Image (cartoon, rainbow, N blue to C red; front, side):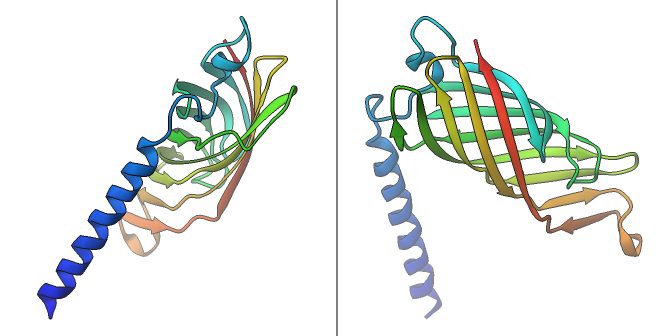
Length: 182
C-alpha cells in the first residue's frame, strides 16, 4: 500500500512539473508582459528605482531581465517584521498584460522572495510570496504597484521561553510602490 501511495505522489509531482513547464514554455516575447524599456519609446529602461510605503517602507529597485521576469530589491524599514530594518529580494513573474490602453499597461504578477529583518538583538529570515498589481505608465517612465503578501519569518536571537530561535506566523503585508525607470 505504501509503495502505491509513493508512486501516486511521484506521478502527481511529475505531471504538475511538466504542466508548469509547458505553460511557462509557451510564453513568447510577443505575448509576455512588456517591461518599461520595451514600451516607452526612447525613454526609460528596464531598471526602476523608487520608494515603497507600507511594509516594506523604503528604497525599492526592480529590474526586468526579460519582459515577463523581474527581480525586486528592498532596503527598508519592516514595521511588521521585528520593527527595524531589513533587506529583501523577490523574483517576480508577470503572465501578461491584463489591460492595455494609450495611458498604461495593467499587469498582475506573482513571485517568491526572501529577506533578512533586524532589530537591536535579533535577526529574522523572512519568506514571502508577493502578489501584485502593476501599472506601467506609457507617457512617463514610471510604475505604480500595489503589492500584498503573507510573510512568515524565523527569528534567530532571544525568544520567549529562553529559546534561541522561534517561528513567527506574521500577518499580511501591504505596500504601495512608485519607481522611475532609466
